[in-house]
Structure formats: structure tokens, C-alpha cells
Image: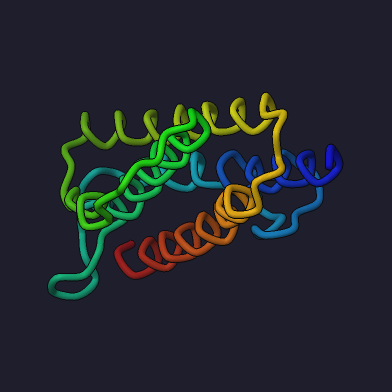
Length: 154
């Protein structure tokens, strides 16, 4: 189980922080940017620009990920939250200050998640495990969506 947890942590690190010159499994090796580096390169205006009327923004995807990690952390704490997914998409536009804070909050949420996974001892609950493993494709999907939105709004 330790090897699987180590691999999970490595994949999450790649998605949220980047490759740091190592091989990659999900993101392009060059430039090797995960969420943090990808979103720090755009400003609040670009983060707040939908590509179609009523479409989601980079800020919305970023908040949705931050929010979903916080929900996952509630499960790590033994709680049984009943998340309102619509709530996670309420942020659409951000000021420069809000954008910087949202970026910091996403990175902090990821760091908290990484610590929770590393510290967990009981991996006997299959539903819990599937929820944790689902964090990888969920993050990969949103990173891909954000990269496409950057191209479309750039």
C-alpha cells in the first residue's frame, strides 16, 4: 500500500506543483507546469474571461478545485459532508488581489491534502479510497480545461 500512496502523492505533486525536471505521467514534460505555475502566469482579467456566454472561467475552475479539496479534507477528518457542487462554481470573476489569494488558497489546500494522505494509516474503506484516487483524474481534467481556456483567452 505504501508504494501506491507514494505514487498517488507523486501524481498529485505533478498536477499541482509540476514536474521539477523529472519524468511526467500526466502533464507535458516541457515546460512541466502544474496548476501553480500555470495559473500564476495569467492575470485576473484573463482568469475572469469566459470563452462563451455563460461559460466557466479559469477563476471558476480554480475555485472549484480548491473547494473540492476542502470537501475531501472533511472526509479525512471523519466527517460526512453533503457538498453543494453548485456552490463550488459561484466564483466567476476576480480582482487581482482575489486572484492572487485564490492561487495561494489552492496551493495551501493541495499541501493540506498531501499531508492528510501521507499521515493516513487506515486505507481499509474502499469507497474512501476510490474518492481519494478520483482526485487525480478530477485535477487532470480541470488542469486541461484551464490550459485550453488560457489558449482561448490569451
